[in-house]
Length: 349
Ligand code: SF4
Image 1 (spheres, rainbow, N blue to C red):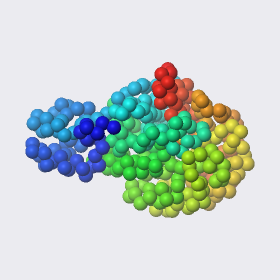
Image 2 (cartoon, rainbow, N blue to C red):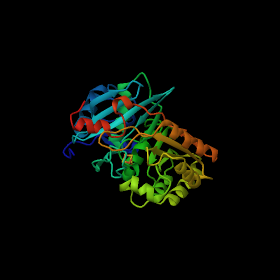
Image 3 (cartoon, helix red, strand yellow):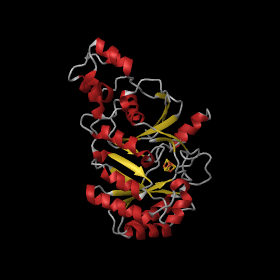
Image 4 (cartoon, rainbow, N blue to C red):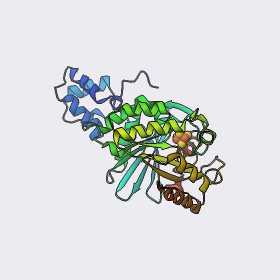
């Protein structure tokens, strides 16, 4: 992608801004001012950075860019959920979803274009993975969503859009570093969630991070064979090891683990499956989030009946586990993982 273009400021780690102090017309506090313009104030060009001297702005413009993916489509849904489709500079499309709930507004972020895990129920994985996003492309999803709805501030951030975050660990961790730091976007760690398939080594690597963000494990099935069938790009499922790593992280950070289960009619929507989950998860500090599947075009699966999901939640609760059911959101505009991108690629409304 655009290798002849100057680097984008959004791709910098916070400490890298310091190098900008070396520019001939820069002052000691220039890096801080520039960082604030890019991240806090969301400036779109150097002209907007009015407290920098004109000569510094000109120098910056020669060596750097203020990049923002271009807005391709916005899909507002009746329930307030908004799908945001962004075109990156190499022409690829990614989506973010803004989800209001009470006084919270959660932004669902993508970490890759496409996804290699290819879960059978997900549109993002239908064409495999195209490429990783850079940390800047991750952060720009936040800047763009802020710009689009300045009146309703974002409160929570989840890496649950397209991509498996641990397949792009370096850039995701770099982005979280900027998100969390007081001189970056100053988002508290408890407001950031990384949703992952949870390979044990990847969880161990995430645990090395000093930032105690939340982890959500995409389990979907209560045993390795069923998981591998549902998530063909997962590789070998090692549920016991995954849970051991997750529990170790809980002990380190005190952050309770969420286990996510996308519920599909005729596949994992039975009380027996709930019982198997209870066996697997008993004794761990975990809350099970049951997510009734949203119908996706081109995928031959069905949404579960609400009473079956309810029965699963009750079974889990009877066995002493915390269980929640996620309300389907954005259904009327097809705002489910990867769908906007597919519609746009085919020029569909
Ligand atoms: S559900 Fe998540 S992990 Fe599975 S294919 Fe979609 S984006 Fe990838």
